[in-house]
Length: 292
Image (tube, rainbow, N blue to C red; front, side, top):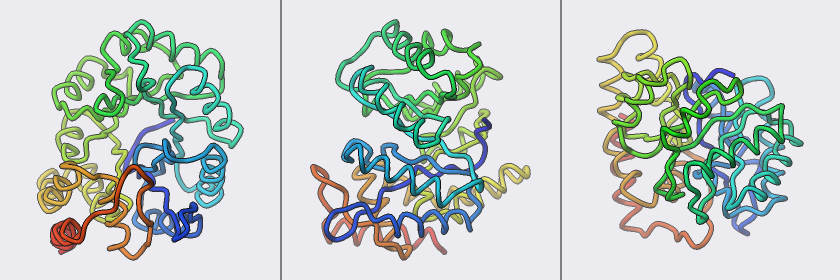
């Protein structure tokens, strides 16, 4: 499984009643495919997987697979607070037809590095058909996928990559240099995408691609063609809106960005609250500036 290009971390749209809006989800996917994305990552942080019921997760996986078909690579999030729960999530994800999974450390339990290695080994031993992308996002899990873990799986044929979302560029550089050829590095820090690609990333698992896919695909195409200055110019134009998203209320801003792009993705589920009118006005200003 090749991690390459722009892979939107899909939002989960909700209708006015608060139910998952599968029609809007399909429309957003088609919008992104038209822009030229390489695949999709449903049930990640941007998709509010933690706020969905198991039945809703199954339905989202079914919709994404049905709409995308063979038009892009699919990598599903399957996460939980303990190994038992994650195994249950992996089982239903595999039953939905997904074999590429993105899995972060269990949150709240705070496993040690040795315990985290055992956690991932249990998943891999239980499900021989899956390929695993490690997910380092310590701001949400409070646990790092450390270099001890990367060493443990560097020769494992089914641990294929890592989405690095720590915000620590030095970590991305060290992964790109010290584990080159062992892991495919995927950018998970949106405001550092250019730096990631300069240091060896070939993919960007990108929440903002939900609302401005044309620009992020343009960035990738320019970089891949060797036009580094052109890619830098795209990122320079995007940086204010990226910085706004990274500054806080990321999911709400991605969903409001979808609305500005013509898709009503609804509000985030509680405990997250909608943006205030002032926050919307501030975000709209940088969003519209990025479209010029």
